[in-house]
Length: 148
Image (cartoon, rainbow, N blue to C red; front, side):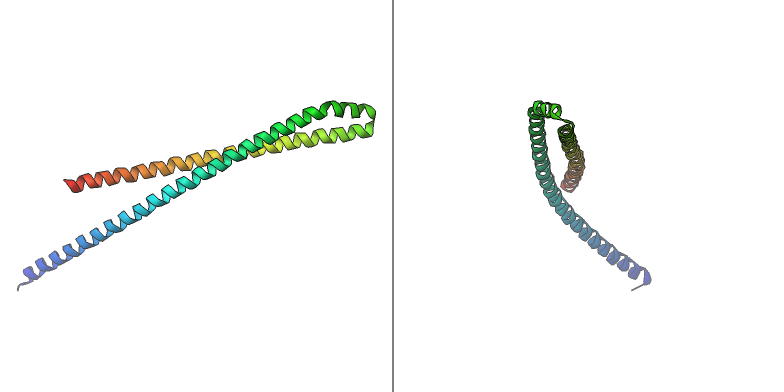
């Protein structure tokens, strides 16, 4: 056997090893994308659940705000009559107004925080959906190539 024949055989063996490595890489990539798809589905479910919880929290905060507002409205005539009774009682009424205002601001702040996180959740959902769609397109393109 001459050195040319040995070189050709070595080249063929190296090419076969390279093809085997490429096939293993494609199989590993396919498995990884499958796992990523499962993770995306799980993340999507978790995000939907979190969004539901955030929505419930927002509704509860809104109801609490409304109840506090109604209570403040109900207390307003009483507070005015107490202010007429004296300066000391007027100071208590003023403190109650400040406390209710602070509570309303706190509740509105909580609503804003929930709304802010809801936007982030929506952004994550968009990115996850885009990634999943790209993966599906790549799979379809790969399957189309393999059918040809």
